[in-house]
Amino acid sequence: MLLTACGDAPPAADAIPTMDSTTTPAAAAIDLSSHDVPLLLTPLDKQLTGGQDPTIVWKDETGTLEVRAGDHFGLMIREEPGDIARLKAALERDPLKSNAVLRETPELLIYRSEFPDDPSLVFMHYCQVVHVGERTFVVQDVDDGTFNQQDIERMMAAISPKSPA
Image 1 (cartoon, one colour):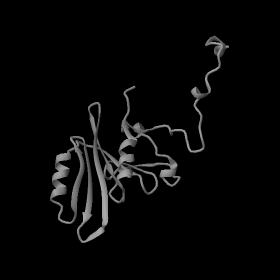
Image 2: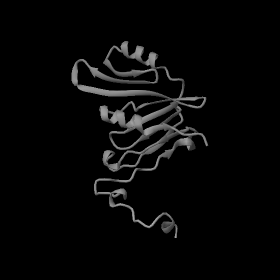
Image 3: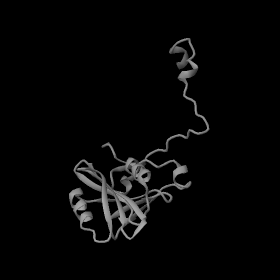
Image 4: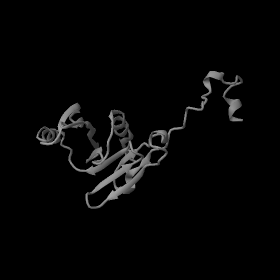
């Protein structure tokens, strides 16, 4: 009955969204507030995570929420004041690695670390400051991960502030 009230003409064929075999529905965001973190995690397509769902683990000893999914997704979230300038200064003083800043804003640092003695050891990293109300969180890649630029971009895009209720 509701459909007839909207008009007589059927919708045009091109107005009906269709799914082909390469399109998958977007996964629902995961609310991290059960861990007292007012952020949302948008899971990656399982093709990008080796078919794995994200695992979310609270690490009491470091006060860190760790999220992993496959070999190409691993991030840590800590509630702390973000200090991109301090991180950048520490990278410049690193005696073991050569670090190159690829992108920098007051709330984001993406950098590449290389060991000068072994050019095959190149690692991409990021650190992002996320403000939610009066709280500040630092989101960065896990220490033991080996990520490329695409992995870093996907991890950054996967975290967003939760809207107040």
